[in-house]
Image 1 (spheres, one colour):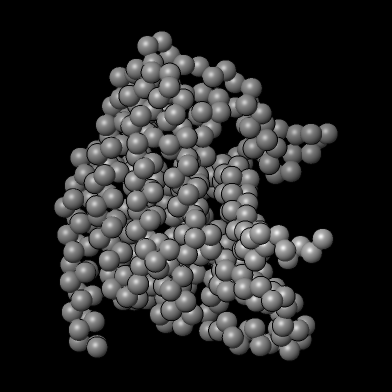
Image 2 (cartoon, rainbow, N blue to C red):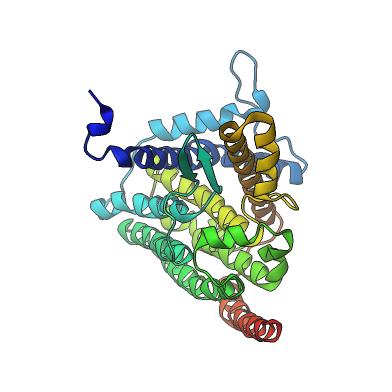
Length: 369
């Protein structure tokens, strides 16, 4: 049987490529980063506080630097009772963790993690969905995560959870407004909402967003931390005030989903920062065509493209890992803000500065062009 006669055969390579990219992104976020970031956070905080950190769990006497703790935590959460408090709204209590974690994963669909490569007659693009309005898609999807926390707070029938949900709604809605304005300067400079186009422009090292929009980077970083609800912006789940905030009444795998959503958001934030401000997959002072020509001259066109793809993947995820460690460093360096301080920072400081940055960017672009 001639396989080319199968209806839709011409679309099979694209379908296989799409499935591979989805599996790759899901594996990187859920299978690699989500479990490992808990370990990294423990060890990083221990290092900063002059402690050893997780190191007791062992198999046959081997602790492998405390990595077994990640596996034992997973076993504990899987085996733990799924407790639902009396008076809780059971359907919403069940739904909330999914609403929290799914948007963090979907947002990665429009983030490019590599360029375009020609492999054995097939043109491969390392992005799941190359939308013309990719950055708007991220903001739209990220906003849905707010509903997960609010639904969890309401469904738990707990006063402390409800207070955490109210804080979550106020904080995330406030900072979404400011965060949208912080990147307008970036969009003005690159004249595109398409993340692949923004990334391609940054092949020139001096066109990286961190050089063209340093103020926008600092403002976006602050807003992203607030959206992630981590120290110093962890008022929605402040342990000293609200026990655990909106997910106080969650246990087992449902609690793990909230926990995983937080770490996946860190990866997503780091990837967005990499694409907008740190040159995406590009190597400073090394062009795509130049490196490809060098590789092709040694191993041929197809293998050269394959090696280039792996190099760019390593560069992109290396930058992401560096930013993840940096974000965690902030988490263990700063004290928690008060609720009124968080609102004041968002509305009275970051928002006006974002508007001033837009104005300054517009004036500079008019003068330069």
